[in-house]
Length: 443
Image (cartoon, rainbow, N blue to C red; front, side, top):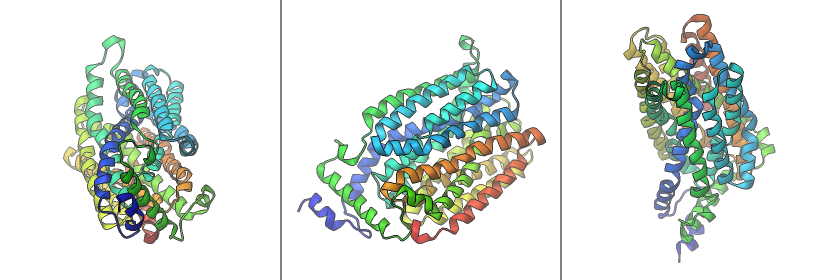
């Protein structure tokens, strides 16, 4: 009996064909490195205004509030376009949607080098958000078409480790670009940074058309037996999901499912902490007394380096133990403690960096630990709209968090009050996670 004939007999909710481990390692090596690089530039293009701010505000005579609004207005476009983009991907496939969005947002991000007025800044940030909206929820949907729920924790951990690694690499790189290229060709350092980080995204978007397959069936690098085993594993996963009384199979049922809305609020809480770190970490480090943009970049990389290691470890632990809620709420409580420690550090840079590292580890690790939860009970027909809806609710935090922190800093001269508020929001997210029934999400 061939592997394809055995597939239907050997795959079940409680068993796995012995060949699947090697097959999924092959799939992961083929898909994840390229998608990881794409997401790294996605996140870098989204948050590099945090570094540009160190020079832009003085050069253009802008306030912290103007910066905060510009950083946040990105997410109005993002939220408005998230669900339509994912529904379009479900209809026409991943390559065309992901490739086109990458080309568009790379161009829009590079165009930020021409900004001179707040109105232009707001407009380009909004358009960048519109262009990026389909990428992340599209990739989450894409993974549900390749991996069963039992493997998504470690895959999301690998994929989303691009966020802290974008900080590890991007922080020193951004600082170096702004310091080394300043004045060349009549452009400021921050202008060169937008250009040099936006253009690679355009090139990656073109490569998407060559390197990604829309489905298992289209993957020429898989054998017929490998495709059959993977398809059977996904079918068994779908059968197990349907056995849950809380499962959702249509977008209409998604809108009626209270757990979807709870998870949307949880994701909002997580992103409030994440975007505070991403947009304000360089400013907080600078407030510790550091002046050189390269030095600020190197120190800002420390919390992201710690988070990249912790994120992958938590993802593997969650899959091994088939437990999701505590692997999400635990990091959120760690993030809370880190923010509180950072506010109490005073002028002690070592304590402040330890606190910021714990906050970054906790908040950023909450991202990959979150996405296996909704994917565990959203059916294939509902996943496109459901995942995008949850993502859109969460991304509202991107509009709320940067302007809130900017306004508080303008009013008080410090970010401490904002960090207290965000600590409370992370606590709320952790408590909401615990209240979601484990039988729905622990897979």
